Image (tube, rainbow, N blue to C red; front, side, top):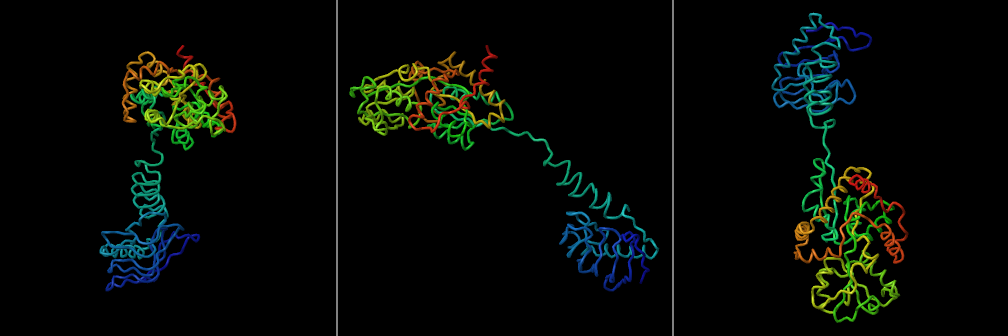
Length: 479
């Protein structure tokens, strides 16, 4: 059977005609050359419905169309290059792309189309409701409302309205990573962590984590690595961190003052700083607050450590090992923080040489301060303000009920270190330690001078070292 061809309009493929098409009913094949009625229609040299596949090279109207194999588990497989107006869409089976075991449906569709051509129904505009392009509401392209791409209303990509991607509103959890030492000079941190008061104050949307350190240098490294946001730390490491980070580590409040003593073996003959000449003196860590206090004392008494050509051997010893060191005669003296001063002097072979007020600045010097990373302060000022308010409240609570607060401190120290302290020992330690948010900036800056003189920093910190503006605003509001 043959049909007359129809002309194209303005060079566009708006006319749907089959030229020279033959139907071979014995093989169920349509052969010849088919024209493409509308974008998205299938053309090719041969379609064989019996084997269950469409072969040959299909028409590809637009660049970037999906090609290759469109799998259909029910009707077989379409192979070769399929025509596709829009990328990622599955072709409509009404135009004969899908074949295979459903070959009878395909053959029927072709027969209908050929009969329609014979009757002269050749005009098929691009807005035809039965085509596979344009704004077709029943096909799988255009503005299709049931497909899996484009502007689908129920799909899984594009501007889908029922998915959980892209424009969906989500609440971001802000991490607040705290640092502290398991030591009573960091009393507020111990109580705050034990009671969960910071978490409660921040509320939903914030996740608070606490990391314990035993060395200021390690905490500074964690600040540099942006693993810590806010930290309780000694004043000397805080100074070092500020200088070495070019002002990125900032002191925003004080935590405690004093809390350090100089002790010596009972049989050492040491009763003053001058007696340290030729002796071995222990400190907790090189470069920490107690170390600088010792260096300052030596300098005031015309002494210096062996490392600087002097006569005093300064060694770093973990506080928990000091009693053994004294028992063995390995050290003659030690400058230590509380509660170790109280613990050591409770033994028979260790005596007090200098009490807290004689160590530095008449006891009015910071032994623990609070630092924050500059970028965290700038991004989350409300978090820093909330934290400082909890810090103030916790300080007030400790000073109002030291007995009850010590219970929380002992429990938290035990949770972290496994060490259990007698309550009387901790209470006695606070007779030498002042829990306060007020910072003696003059004493802090003198620590910087000693740090520079001893070579721990290369330059003095600038005005970026301290920013008490949020703290002072909160204290003004309270008063």
